[in-house]
Amino acid sequence: MSRQIEQALLSLMPAQADVLPPQLVQLAESLLAQSRQKASTLKADEDVARLYACAHLACDRLKIVLDLPPITPRPPIPPRNYKRLYDYLEKILPSTSSTPKRGTPRRRTPSSKAVDGVDATSFEERPLPSRGTPSKESSLARFQTASQADGDTPTKSSARRSTRNVNHELPFWVRPVTRFLCTGTENNQLSSTIVAAMEAVMLPAGRRAADEWVHENTTALFAAIYFYVTMRAKALTSEAEVNSETYLPLRKDIIDLLDRAREEAEVKVADEHLAWSGWSTIKPKAFDDAVAKVKERGWLDSDWYRGITDIINADGTADVQMGDDDEIGLGQTGQVRRADTMFQDRFDYLSEGRRAEYKIWKEATLARISQAMASNGAMEVDPA
Image 1 (cartoon, helix red, strand yellow):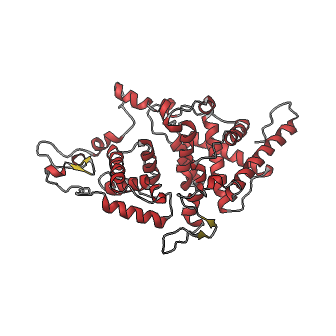
Image 2: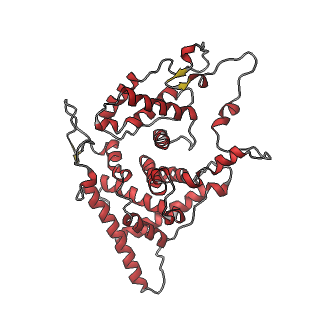
Image 3: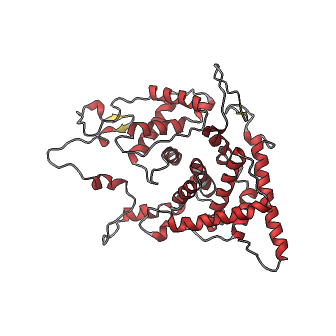
């Protein structure tokens, strides 16, 4: 659950570094636990957004104290339903003391020791007569991942922190490279989807995937996921098509972007070798193989892929019309299905999204076949 909360917090703050303040994660977890006690009977479509709303509420309550970056919510349910859910949770979840303003002393009382299930004294900046005001560097030191100053010997705890994601987290470069690619191509709204896809494939249920191909071809997997996510978004917003003529230039563009990312993306880890662990320079054949494998393994039949439709709709490309009875009706591009019905997108095999997905896969496969036939099996030809 902590991983899901961290992912929700990072999606709310795209500019936030990979390491989240511990107080923020702790408050979000506390609010989520309290919401399940005090609001245990939410509607099915509202319960889908419970975790996201609690993370959003935690960000709003600590944004001043922790100096958080801008918060840009992209809720997983229609905005009107989400606003109603957020207002309700904000009202019922305790916020006695809220968060103190900077520089404002606060008198400590027995009842102020815990706020929202979190030790409130950890947030306070109380003037102490026996010591001076801490510097900015010392205040931010606990949030920094880069460990030791030059010449210092790293401790065992810092060594554990620097290697903790070898088996149980994504490679350090995944999020920075995702931000680099999405920012450069103006696809910022898709960054959380790409990261969620990598986690779903590499760390199913929070554990290292048993499929060794995934870990031996991480960069090619990343490229294929980026390809499918961006193509699905284009298919939902325009008449853009992928065929044997457009696939090859598109493949070259993605490979070039990855080469640039390796040189320009900033990974905030002291050890550069560890920062780019698992990275490899991919060739067109490796890209083609990864595109085919993502489709064949059924990795596209997942929530992260189906959720692209909701992200595009939330950006205003498909309006949702709401009636006074709070039932979801027909939008401009089709019917939006409720979460508590059996008519789900995953069972609609002839939907526009599924047709677009199949078309992308078909054209990519035909392009590979044409390329193989042109080479007559003698050698691999790189048209790039």
